Amino acid sequence: MGGIETEKKSIIRDEVLRQSMLRIALVFLWLLSLMLLLAISSFAWHKLTPITLHFLNAQQVDSIQTFLLSCAITSFFLTIIRTLAK
Image (tube, rainbow, N blue to C red; front, side, top):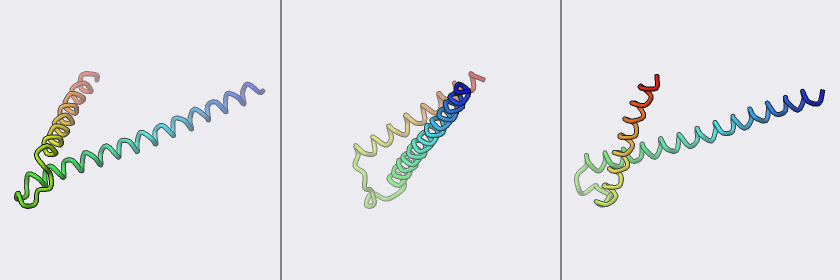
């Protein structure tokens, strides 16, 4: 009898842990999405507005450009991997 209750508690504990990890992953995903949106917005603002409205220096623009390029390349390769895995 005690073994069955212990097994049920173990299953419940595992489910709670899985739910907690899922919540942490979702928060992390939303933060990354927000950072990407901010980078895209800043880069677009810099490219579309006159020089008098720019707030980024050349090094910052280069950093954002490198970040966005690496995101695009990673997305491309992940899409290929997912397609080949099917």
